[in-house]
Image (cartoon, rainbow over all chains, first blue to last red; front, top):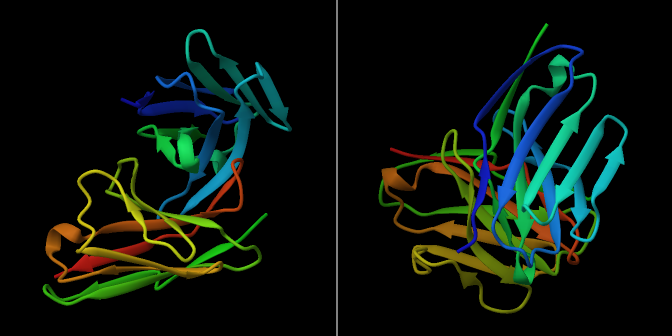
Length: 110
Length: 114
């Protein structure tokens, strides 16, 4: 079945780069997403990548997609304390539904 | 970006009562809305998909008679938790989409059943 895996925790120092990794199983996914969730809040769409792309950059965010290995990563450059949150990757399925990973809790230390 | 609201943001109810949660797309028409459930420190689990004017499609293991979903218009979907029990306590999040690319999420509703 469909499955999306993420590591649960990542701790970095302010100013460093953060790299959050994700693996997925369904090779037919058209889009892959990164969402950010702050405590007690809903999900904020950070970025998404179409499955025929290898990389997408948007300001401090860089998404890399290795379709062969079914591996997706999100790099946050110059990480700030305001970036502390839970980050979810998700793959799109038929009908538009999303399958989410468990979420990676990013902790940014000053 | 597109905005989705949920009401209420937090509700406490007694066991055995029913609770209705509203999900509205404020500045776009959502042809499809999704309802998710999230337990503390866990991922979002899709409960059901609803298309305006038709019956919702429920995921395996989700009781359709317990979680009633109505998608009466292109901007409003409601989730009613009937005969709520403490195990229904959770964070419920809806989302709306106009196409295949982007899904816009509401801020969530925290339900506590006592």
